[in-house]
Every structure is written in C-alpha cells, then in structure tokens.
Length: 303
Image (cartoon, rainbow, N blue to C red; front, side):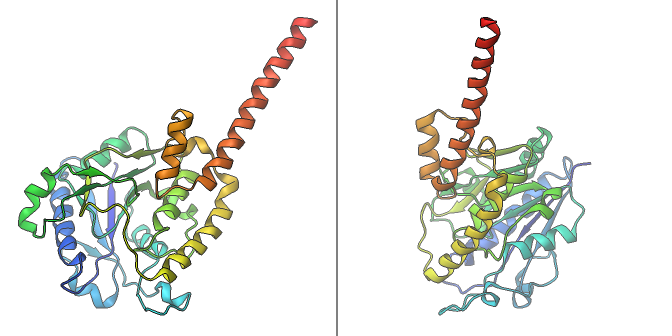
C-alpha cells in the first residue's frame, strides 16, 4: 500500500523573525492535512532538528535523531549560521520510515487540507518524483486562527522549487554534497537530482496545494558567503550529474522553442548554462537520426 512520510526542519527563532509566525501555521496545516487524508493514504510527519530546537517541535511530529553537523563544519563564515545540510535531513527521513514516498518542504511552506490526497493522486498517475510550486499569499496573515482565510487565498504563482516528493528508492542515488538549506542552490541541487534519476518526473507549477506567507519572489539572503558556498557545492554536483542528464526530463522541455528558453531563463531554479548544451545535444541526436533515415531511404530508393 502506498504511504507517505513528510519531513521539515523546525527551528526556534526570535519573535521578529518571519518564521516565528510562519512555522506554527505550517505545523498546524500539516496536522490538518494528515487528518484529512487518514481514510485515503497513511501519512507520517517527521522533524529533523538540532538539540536546542527539540522542545519547539509539536507533539504530532516524530522527531528523528538530533542533527549534529551544519554548514559551519565545512567552511569558515564571518557570520555564524547553524544551517543544516539537506542530505542529513533526508537521510534521517529515509532511515526513520519505510514509507514508499518521501516529502521535504521548507519550514515556512504551509499545505492545504487536501495536500496529501493530491500527492497520493499524482503518485497513482505513475510519477516517481514531482515538485509542487507554492502560491504566494498576502503577508498580512500572522496567526493559526487565520488558517481558514489562508487556505482560501489563492494568491499568486511562484517559480521557485520548495516542495519535493520522490520515491524512497531515489534517495540512495542523490548527489547533494554539503548543500545547506535556507540558502539559494538548495532548490536547484535537489531538483536536478530528481530530473536526473526519476523515471517519470513532473513539475506541478500551477496547483493550489502549498503556500508561503508573503508575495516576494526574490529574497535578500544576507551574507553572500553562504550563497557562494552553496554555489560551489552545486558546481561539483552539476559536474557529476551532467553526463547523466536527459533534457526530455527537464521542466518546459516540451514547450515551443521561444517559450521553452524563456521559461528556463526566468526560473531561478534552472540554469540556461545547463539547459542549452543539453538541448543542443538532443537536437544533434535527433538530426543525426533523421539524416540517417533520409540517407538510407534515398539509397534504398536509388537501388
């Protein structure tokens, strides 16, 4: 029977942080969605947390072993930020459950009540990995009591990737280096692994299934040292994955030429420097095939 396990990284923050109001809403919407799906699909909720944050995790989450490493173990930073590695979070989820499908979302990404039912539906369609783009809703919401209004707010689309669903058999294949969460290049690193290794991937870019409070598209990430670190880690990941990529598995690859390239160019989780050579490689392969078909067909007719 299909089952689902979902993990997030709760963190205790100061009252002036956006996470101070976003996380409780995320926690509660996940609890509600699990209850809503109880007669459809089994759902387990997990957390990956540092020891100092363990007391902050709600009781309806199963806590995995406390995180021990952070990005600070792999580089020196002027401003210390104890950011966990995405690999460590996913490894804890993989080891904690036998669920067939695994989900990772950021701690500020809430879900609608039918979220897990929708995930189950797309699993039943034969997808072994998919990404769900969030909706951007008004930044006015601050309290769990506002959840009925929050989930009714359709909001605006967002191009970035922050909700990842994949079959557990894919986890041992993932190449994630020391990429840390909460910083750019987490989304491109995890998504491109799924593009590479999934047999049947789909991007759900226009569904009202997850949300983020606040309508900003590009965020100021502060200390550029962390961005530079994740960028360098992704360069290593890209080098490993590049020979295995197939552009046909990439989002937007089936669109007409102009729309395809504009979609790749303006999506912050895609890189034209990856898509262009892959698209060119696929074009040459198609051209050779069609040329050979034409040439040998001509020879047969001539004979």
